[in-house]
Image 1: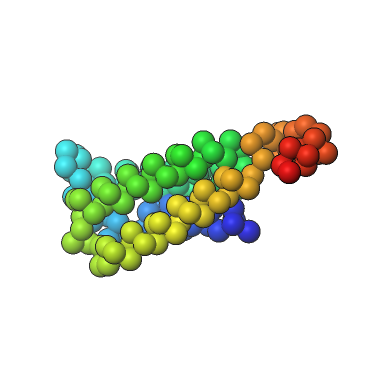
Image 2: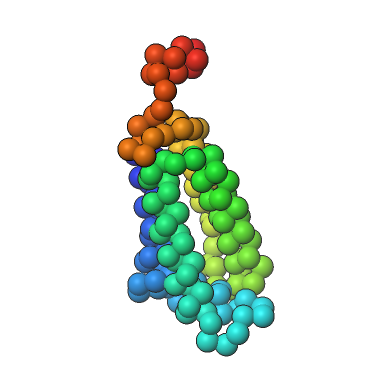
Length: 137
């Protein structure tokens, strides 16, 4: 369930908030980015949104969970730091955003820590289960 919660958060933020129907506050933040050509905000939002949807799939698939956690952490910190620096006037409660992000980051790393590091193409862990069990003790 934790992996599903993380994936759903990425899908919500990516698809609903950036692609369809999109949120005005997120569009306003992106439009405020320095050096962004006029009219590029919509395309950038869709690209970011689709990348977030793909990230949710990565979390569900469980491939390389620690790499996924690093990428997710960098994006959460980067996106929200950028949002606070360029579009703080469009974020109604910055403190709440930061607290929610800390909880989300904790969940991201919880998911990574509880996933086997090596999986087969079918999503099952590689190796002898008994050996893994003994190594965990």
